[in-house]
Length: 111
Picture 1 (cartoon, rainbow, N blue to C red):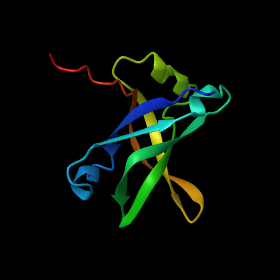
Picture 2: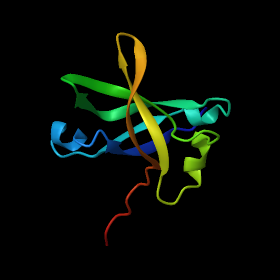
Picture 3: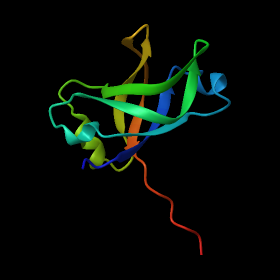
Picture 4: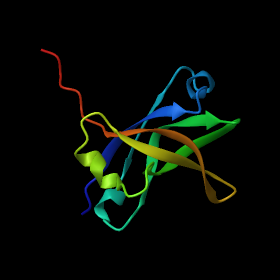
């Protein structure tokens, strides 16, 4: 069975994303797409949707922001990995945002 990868996406563009989304600058979600090495884009199912131009989105598509990079580098990144972010409109993906992708770590319980 494929392994679920939990991710966090910090939105850096558009600059007013947080204003449109109650102060949230981060999205969290999960994917199985990391299991397929050939994929250059990963579809992420979000834990909670976000609003952009009066439309609520519950999934995003991410790809490496720079030519020659591969999303699998996020597995080794300490801080994050730069990505382009797309949302679906009328059945097609449209790149409209940029951000930093990182693996979501479960917080340790406080003693």
